[in-house]
Image (tube, rainbow over all chains, first blue to last red):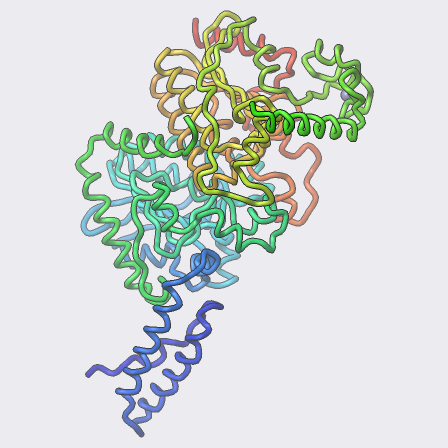
Length: 326
Length: 285
Ligand SMILES: [Zn+2]
């Protein structure tokens, strides 16, 4: 029987995962004893692993929208560059909008997916404060959106599919961003994405924050990870504007219907990508594997479509969005 | 209208009057300019297209007034007037969305935050859309997105240019993700308009921000704004909170956007119809 790994559990956990902490620590202790060779603990570890699994299952099967927001934003959650590394081969990052700057909050590049050349892009958050400062917490400036458009056009010129990963609190609301036309940069991307002649799949991996998310998310197919969110405003933003009280973010999170399940029901997304037990951060490799097979599955029926069919497919998808009284 | 609605409407109208009085605007006869504080005879203000004759401040215009100002007399034919918003999420904040919709309809006499139709401007046929800030702050929900998109599709069918006057606080949050999707829908429609070789003129009026500025408002072949209009992605308060410093004067106003290359023209209201006519002539001849 293969020995259980030993220090798998020394890692950050979420507030509501606390019931697991004690079990994780206990397991680590058993593994240490096992390591010294003084006592045989394999059976105990196996038992404990089962308990961990059951507990985790219980916690994650009943998450509230607010808890899902916490998972979606968790600093240990795999980011775009993590996923790119696990899903694609030969990734080469392409920098700059050829106009003003390179935006590290939104990464773009060329890569290979199962033998097929593709263009990939995504907002990239950091795993530490330092990384987040360098990446502006995944909040892109206009240059990010303009770089994304430049690389989308590259994909179009050479007939390569586009995969986008969405994970941003929103487009950056800064002075320079306004000065350089944040609104125009996003608006233009929306119009141009609608007209792309190549297959395009978008995946909300963590936080789909408003226009800043949509700015690279007009795929022929739009998927969401099980514990991701997609929303027009953050729950706390909504609470402070509509509920006149930022502290009512929990209520706002429920009212706004921002989870993958809600958005599938509303017809805004096409499918949900299952996450490993305990969320993507609990098993990034498996999470990446799930994303990869979802991309392949969604791309397949798009590949034979003509340029005109791809545009029509995308137009019809977004044309249907809206609920009103006629 | 039920008797209940009639009373409610009276009540809301009374509230509006009260607000006016609080703002020190004595009735409908005299108006105090928000900018220069001078008292203006209302008739003079109307005659001057609701621009302060003393300081040039552009008062907000209702959509009906805008139609009268820019389109040839009696040429506007409204379409899709019957579309109304739906509270499909049963969204309740301090008040239910269903209630807000109903009150806004009663208070404004409009069915939502945009009116659309065909019109003639300087004898040229156009598809004309005009947003109205008085209806829930001009926020864009499914109805605004749908009416805009149908307007553009009608223009493609009739092979005529599109002119839209924007004014909006942003997305209609009570429709959550569906309001965000209207940005995609309207922008895609404009892509189709362009593919068909038809022009789109966007006129931004005070204020145009959020989801509307980051979609159809900024996508004009020609982008026009009225003087001193706030045109922004994120509002000034949000930015101040983010960067924790005071913003420079004139930041995010039309003149600032013109200087930073985001607009073609800042156009005074008195010259607007003439300017639009000349632009339409350029595209037509
Ligand atoms: Zn004045």
